[in-house]
Amino acid sequence: HFEHRCGDDIGQFALQRVLNRPCFFRVGNGGYDIFALHDLVNRHADGLGRHVVKGCKPAFAHLLISAGFIQIHDDVGVSGFKIRGRIVKGDVSVHANSDDTQIHGGFTDFHSFSPPCHFISKNHKQIPSAPVVPENDPSVLFNTAGMMPLIPYLMGQTHPYGTRLCDYQKCIRTNDLDVIGNTTHHTFFEMLGNWSLGDYFKEESIEWSFEFLTKHLNIPVERLAVTVFAGNDLIPFDEESFNKWKSLGIKEERIARTIEDNFWIAGETGPCGPDTEIFYFRSNEEIPEKFDPEDERWVEIWNNVFMGYHKDANGIVTELPKKNVDTGMGVERTVALLEGVKDNYESSIWKDVIDLISEIAGIPYEENKTSMRIIADHIRTAVFISADRAGIKPSNTDQGYILRRLIRRAIRHAKKLEIDINSNWEEKIAIAIMDKYKKYYSEIETNQNIALEV
Ligand code: SER
Image 1 (cartoon, rainbow, N blue to C red):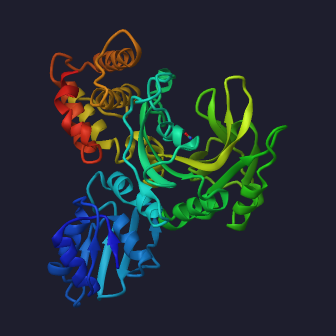
Image 2: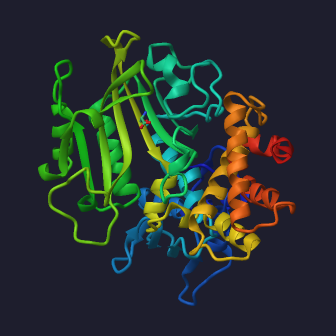
């Protein structure tokens, strides 16, 4: 029984031929890998009696690896989305390489397959993203973290999908618009999360994160470091997490203990708890033996919060009846890191949008980075706000005010680049962004015209 998230009878047929046994697919998702498999079985023979496929989706290849059907060529190995391997059953050779695939390969793979597959294999149910405007919480304008729509369940309510969940949550943070334009911050971003609602706790959470990073994304352990909660008057040092990381092979010098940075709460009150953060060494320089969280070459990629507490309006912290896990991984940052770029806007999430802006402006990205990043970022956020279920329009208050500010700032930077703002420049950029996201978020397709009007 081999499960893969595709619904396509060509793929089913193809996989059946390769594996020589019945295959089951679940969840319709279309997918290039299906066509790759079709090719694999029917088209490309390399003259040695083997079938060869290029450009198979790497995440799919990962699946084949874990099922034992692909062996990695020693000389190439796996790094991020780049994989070259040989299918060891069925006399077939597979080259899954992001360079061979579409420009969005990395993002598409990451988005549709990798993490949900990992957590689904650990009995998690994938839930859809909640809207960007919170439906039951008037105290905040937007969802700023993956856990926000889940607060009632972290507090003890029963979730209809059970106690193990995973998702991509659309998040918007606009508290610090001035930093937008640098390489790593975005007003809109997707947060990948997995949750335990009173189910598993530190042990499994850390183990699965480690497994996902080192086995699925093939990040070498030497590039990883973590922080754990050092302890305060109320909550002790998180020895359990510390020991777990050590048992997985993280050296003691790579486990830093902090207090403020290792306690997580969304805002002032609500479910909260100590966390353990995972860092990746992004530089090509030699990796220092000792991990210093202040050293900017280490970038935080994942945050596992052990939500066993609640903080009330008087600042009183009490234990929750059930211990939960809330993890959050920023998709933009992780994809950039896996693709080996230091500027998020050069990853497959943004590159085509940036190229389009550069084409519209008739000037290169290299000399106009900040304005182009701001335009790309703000139009994407404006698309997600205006296509959201809440029907936000530019106005003088609340979410509408943020939307208006984003659009104005985008226009200001378009003028700076001497784009003809009476042309349909913003429509072209918005459409490029929508085309990229509508397969994951149906509201982008349904509300396309509303967003374009805005
Ligand atoms: N809530 C935590 C964060 O936003 C983990 O998901 O980082």
